[in-house]
Length: 198
Image (tube, rainbow, N blue to C red; front, side, top):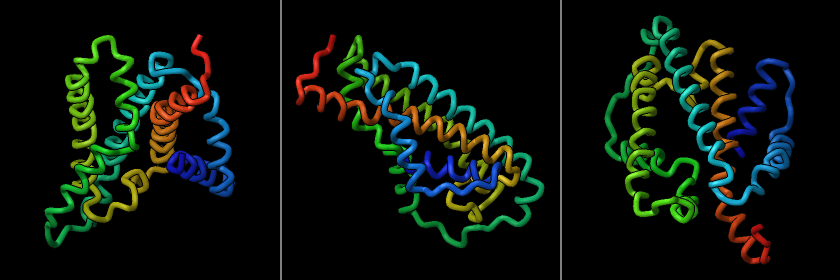
């Protein structure tokens, strides 16, 4: 919700010159998500997983296009790393593996699978697909921007339209992913309060 609220604030500022308090945006995003968070199990919102994947893929494609457009301008002045720090590789791997806290949803996903014994296969495919999407973008971004990348590669894109399109797609991805991440907590609360599952 935090990243989504930040991106919505950036979008409003970039295109409309409107500044909305970050705290207010978090409340608006939270209230807007409530109907999606009341869905029963991942079987009921499989479409959110597909839509999140499509928005992520679109964002990554736009990032590559933006970096390609920026190459002639940014590559000659990019910063170079003076030394390599091996622990940074492990920090990056941890960020990829535990991004967005999705691991809390794994037990729910296993429980709802037709063949739970295939969970390992599904996990390998999912992390492999994420790696195939994120590694090329990371390499391309490093080649173009070097260590002059700001807090996010998205903010390094020079074209405001492309930058905000990527922000919108990532925001949609995060909002859709939240429905999956919060679902185990919601199911536990339903069980605690004996909510009927009809």
